[in-house]
Length: 170
Image 1 (cartoon, rainbow, N blue to C red):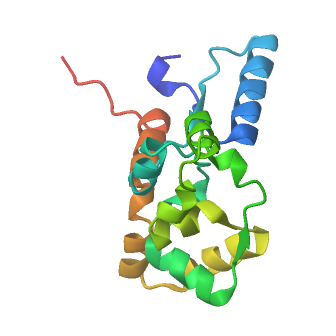
Image 2 (cartoon, rainbow, N blue to C red; image 1 turned 180 degrees about the vertical axis):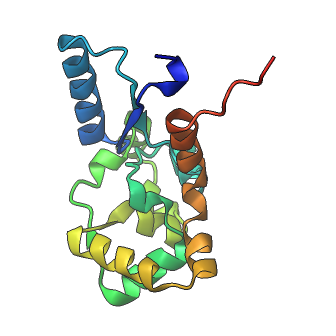
């Protein structure tokens, strides 16, 4: 069987503590079962462009699929009560930010723009995830494509793995 004919699979993991744990666990299980060449590739969600400035400021940003939603969807979620507070705000602070605060520096959350603070201090709960998904499903195609535009780089990586371009004929 040619490499291009082999079945491919992909696993997508959140870029947070639990996602990292599960990604490593899958890799260990694949190795244990001797399936290293089975065509499965694990993908960790990269930090979306919208959140990169927060990472650069020293925040530990958890990246799940909802992190890719537009600011408009996050605003809708606030208006409709789809969000819940993040329980461990200290976990969002890097050691550097914690040290700065301990040395008398300002609270890094107080210096954030409203949209950035929202994305750090709130999250989509299970109900909110369902509601957002339904809202996108009810959108016209143009609106849905606009809402899901930030997902394009992730989708392209998956597409390239699952459906590689055929090698050029010589």
